[in-house]
Image (cartoon, rainbow, N blue to C red; front, side, top):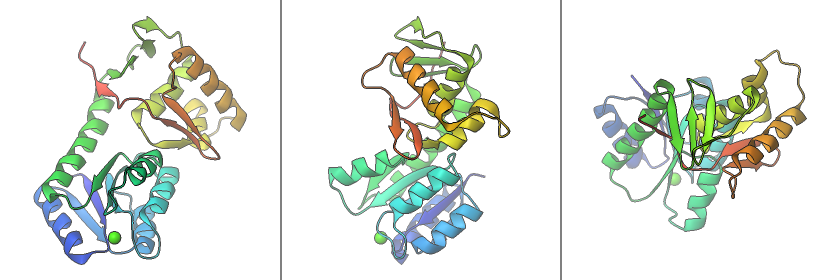
Length: 230
Ligand code: CA
């Protein structure tokens, strides 16, 4: 059973979401403030967290940042009463998988959670992913851009795989180092930057679908990968 956390300070909304998600078959844990949520999500990470932005103690964007560093695989949906476009962009740039503006239908939230879970699940089972002009073949471990072989090295391929597998998530240098060499690898931080620079060049896309996040790491901001039937 997939596990979903609801972080919402408004009691009626929190209860409503919990009810709908439980009815849809999820195991739900709910938090009423940002402090408890930050602690709870770290100790007992769910598959997907639904995060309100305006919360007592610690706000939702701060929690999102913390989760992206400590639990990069967690799916995150941001909720907010603020409907301005700038807030939407801020949330997505910070690495949320999705964004829902209040007021919303609870059934819509359930659909969005299911979509994120399905994407996580299908990508891990399928061997060919497409994200716009980029097609990744995980069986052959190769990437094609606009139908031409990108001729990636093994390291570049692994970086691309890790980034595309978790679109919008910020992967830290430490996490990317693990991807390249395993936790015992003896390579420097700078090595990541060198490989990413080469990878971007080989992809040859402008704007680049790989974004550097200053002081943090890298993020796939290209199209969301979908399973490709071949
Ligand atoms: Ca709130």
